[in-house]
Length: 231
Image (cartoon, rainbow, N blue to C red):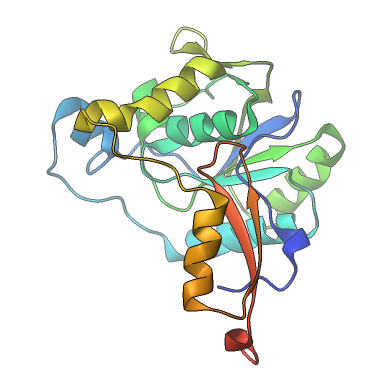
């Protein structure tokens, strides 16, 4: 879709050490059809997670409101791989770690960290905005867990996991080549992306930003007559 105001974009990268980390939405620990079951345990059968349409809409609209009011620094959806994968992506993107303490729960740590229950987000909140965010969550009957804070250069889950962000980034960027055992995969340069856009839209005015400084994660603003009158 089209975004009317680019100032309202909130990325998934952690922004600052010492900020609070909340999980929006209830984690029930659904592992059937999850990446954990398929990749780690080799289990591909079982039911997919249930979707509560009220929670899906309610949680999503509340997160959108928090973004528009600039009350959260970062937001990332929880999907394939569950909470742990989402946290890893947020740490790698921002080059900032997280110190996590899992909430007391009736489910085990694997279910909490890798479950793929629907309608969930991870948000980063500054100290000054924490009370306002909690108030809005509670007024809108949105379930949330406070799971920790952004933290130096490690993803620290105590006895479950403790890894430097640099090491995590290396593991994240090297798996593809190891999986295929070849080196054909290459990131695209900004000039290549601009050239492809220009072929399709010769009149385009293009601004491309390298979001993570890794020549692999870009945002592009494109102005063209093709988009005139469209929203």
